[in-house]
Amino acid sequence: MRKYFFFLFFLLGYSFVVAQPKLYRPPVLTDGWETDTVASFPLDTTILLELLKEAANAEPFDLRGLVVVKDGKLIIDEYYNSFFWENIHDIRSAGKSVTSILALIAVEKGLLSLDTKILSLFPEYADHRHPSAAKSSITLKNLLTMSSGLDADSDNPSSPGNEGNWLWAKDYVRLILDLPMAFGPGERYVYNSACAMLTGAAIEKVSGKTLEEFAREHLFEPMEFGDFFWQKTPAGRTAAMGNIYLRTRDMAKIGYVLASGGKWKGRQILTPESVKAITTHYLDIANYSAAAGYGFMWYLNEAKIKDKSIPFYFASGNGGNKIFVVPSLNLVVAVGQTAYGYGYGHRRAHKYFEMILESSL
Image (cartoon, rainbow, N blue to C red; front, side):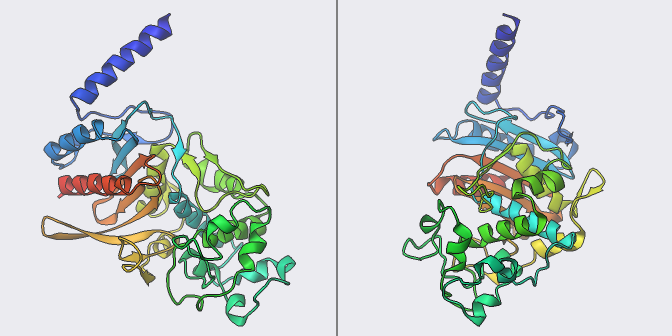
């Protein structure tokens, strides 16, 4: 009975907040975040209150979480539509950006290098189809920049490497390595899931662990993540192309580890050199996406706010799942949504991000 009254009180309080958004100090929970109030920073609270009001009433009702981190402190921590801080949800292809971080951790540990030839890691597939010098020259860097040259295009259902052709196969590595080449490695960017899956398979091969185990040991536990779930393929491999279920607070940690130069609470998770490598503009992708450039499975762009040009980079997943990082403002914004298959989720996330940017200038 006592729990029932507490829950009823919480719901009534939550309804009041939805009706009249307020800026407050997020609760301190056992996940390592330091918290602070918006009032501690030179932010335009009028814009932020307008944002929270809009988010609280956003339709359709598939917005899940909005987390803002400023100068390493959690200042906005809001949840919507029956979601709470401890709930996890599928961030879809934003998980590719997690895979890229894990790949650089593997490089730091000497398990891989950016120049590692991918086929050299899988001698058991020496009889792969369509052999060529170009295919043999595909490197880890090519995978991380979506420029392998393999005929794999997630936006083209007729592409032989479209994930619909191999995703549920027992041995997807063979099917991907069997693909013909469409262009030379490094020549251009083509968005696909095959590159991410091969990256995960490479990490698993050299580490002797599943990608989930590797992530737990080197990223999630050191950064005090809460519950998570990572989908597996029929062969038991971790789905490195995404499909990781995280709390929105932990999405923000993924962005923060890059914003902080690779550190979490004084512990070096990534070297600054790896952070720079992940967020360097390697390929122009304006013809392929809303972003201008591509790093290692992170998008790079600039926002035009108040006659200023603000560089930022972000992870992006189906449904409007975004992790934005603005180095010049020491700002991280995570937006969790389940608008799977609809473009409005992406537009909504970018709108909220731009409102937060505007409040910061």
